[in-house]
Length: 110
Image (cartoon, rainbow, N blue to C red; front, side):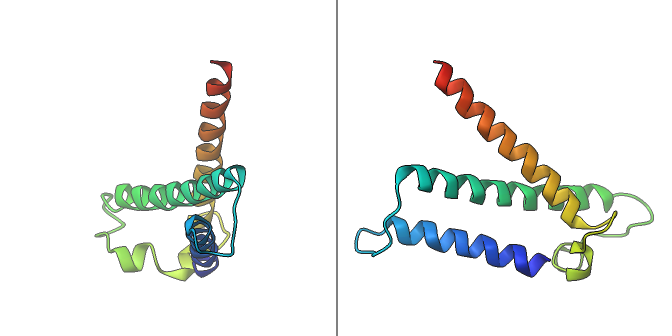
């Protein structure tokens, strides 16, 4: 699951960067760029939330020390299960997107 999410993130980043090049054949509208930036921000916030929760859990006695490679990049921890990283990533991504949407709605009021 982690590899799949990483490939999605990299492809979003590449599309956005190609759309910003003046000599590129990929032309993006401002609305599409805004949606791409939202998706990139949501994915980054989900990943950061997973790292923060792992850091907090590593402070408990039964968890041991935190290692970035084993605790975050281990693909088995990203499975869709009750204790997997996927649900933390998913819920934090939804909350982040709601915050972005609410911020835009408040800007429309002014």
